[in-house]
Image (cartoon, rainbow, N blue to C red; front, top):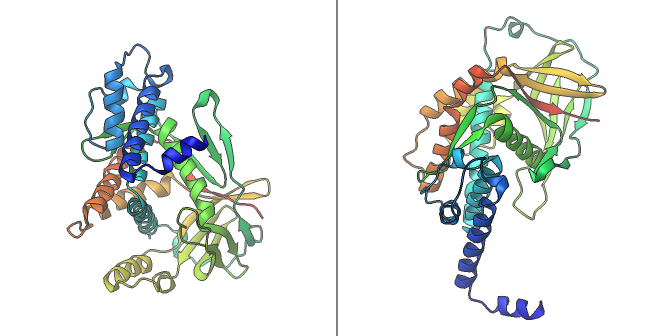
Length: 358
């Protein structure tokens, strides 16, 4: 082992990168040839598995077999992991690009969250000053538990984020990775677990707790998403939001537009976001109790019009000043969003929220 380390440490960087790519492609090829990666009745030749693994790692978009018809969800997950490994090989710059993509998605979803609030709700036109003492106080996130799935199908992150998405079993969401490489993913079996795992993995890094005061204010302890290897830099957000009580199972959340935009330096961006926040307020948030733990969530009735607004907003986003990487990330996001209205039409139940603890 010591001899191996000496040989490894004396290799030039270019050779190590080449060996890294070759090893990843070889491992990916072997995984794609495993029975759990190939659909029943389908035969995959080694050269096709090698070509698919190479295409995924290099993100060329070239394929000799149809990914959805040839590979099982496990095989498709292997392809997705190989694509992500390629991004890691590209170094720190790519990590910053991925971080920007996460912030882009968060910003678009946040804006859509606000614009989806309809002003024609009768309850929204009333002022509520009634207290709900059960939700008052400081609530934290549940500790994330990693659960190994049976049959080596991966891990499930169980935490405060709870998502329910009931739709037909064959509902697919097509992910466009650019360069002609597309991958259909099953909403219930792949997209839903992916959303759950990402949310429960990243949320504890950016949100520590939420406080509902008895006079209707919402405070939070939060952090920006830390870089790899760093810890969260916790800050307190006081007075950015407030709430009114409709009944024991419903509150309306209002965002303070001035405070929410005070750290935005770009004047045009600040004016646009502030205008949206001022126009739409009183976000309806449902409450359901699991023993002593409140579950704050939005449902299909709220999310469906929100998605329609998101799609309309994305159509108006200027792309001429985006570099190639940002444009690819934006097009991936847009490609996903434009498929969601049809999927939501097929959805019978959708709930997205946080189950908190004291």
